[in-house]
Amino acid sequence: MATGGFEKLSIFVVSLSFLCGDAFGGSCKEAKLCCTGRDSSCVVQKAPINAIIEDLSDKPCYCDHACLKLGDCCPDFKDACGVVDCQVTPWGPWSPCDADCGPGTMSRSRSIKVQPQNGGRHCPSLEQRRGCQVSTCHHHPDPAIKEIAMLLPGSLSQSRIANATSDIRKNLRVRDPTEYPQYDPKKTYCVEFEVLKASKACRKESNYKALKEGERVCVRCESEALHESLGWRCQGHGVAGRITRWSALSAPHCHGKWLRASAEPDRTCEDRTCKDASTWFIFV
Image (cartoon, rainbow, N blue to C red; front, side, top):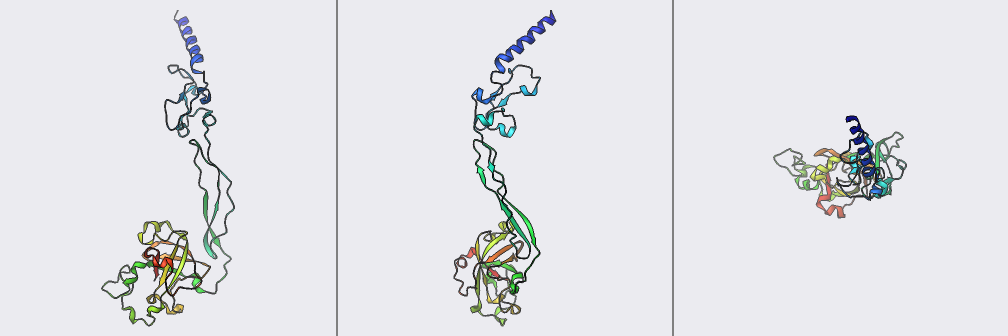
C-alpha cells in the first residue's frame, strides 16, 4: 500500500508540473513578461513552486532587466524585450608618436556602431593610449627645443621683491631685482601655449588646474627671470610649431607637454589668456 501510494503521488506531481510549470517553458515571450529595472515578481516558473527541483534547468528564470547583471535571465529575454548590447567598430590604426625625439604617446580610437537599448551592455572604452619612443632624432638648431619650462602661478608675479623669507613659494628673489643688470620691466614678454598633455596630478593642484589638455595658457617672461646664458630670454619659452615640455616648480608631479601657439613672443602681453589671472603663469 505504501509503495502504491508513493507511485500515485509521483504521477500527480509530474502531471501537475506538466500542466502548470512547463506551460511557458522558461520563455519571456510566451509568458508575456518584460519588466524594467529590478522586479522579482517578473519570473517564469519552469516547475511548480512546491515541486522538488532535481534539475538546475528547472529553476525559475526572470524577465526583468536586473537579470542581465544577476545572470538568471530566461533564454529569450534579450530578443523578447528588445535588449540591445552596445556594438563598437574595430580599433583604428595607432596615431604617429607625438614626440619628435625620445619618449612620447600614441593613441587609437574606435566609434559606437549600435547604441545600447533597454538595459543592454554599456559601451566599452573608445580610446587607448600607449607609450612610444622616437629614436631617429633630428637635432633642432634652436636649443630651446630641449628645455623644460619651470612654471609658477601668475599670482606670484608680485612676489619678486626682497623680504625676510627664502621660501620659493613666497619669494622668487631674495635680493632686490633692481640689482640685476638685466632688470628692465620693458623686457617682459608673454608666450601663449596649447597644452597637449598634462599629468593627472595637475587636477589636484588648485594653482595649476588651467593646465588641461586642449586648453590655451599664457606664460609671462618677466625681466627678473631672463637668463644671460640664453641670450636674455626665459628658459623653456618654446619653439614655434614644436612640442616642448613644462613642469610646475612648486608641484613637480604636475608636468606635461605643450605647443607654442604664437610664432613670436608678445611684448604687450595683451593676449586673451594673459588677461585671465587663472590661465597665466610665469617662467622661473
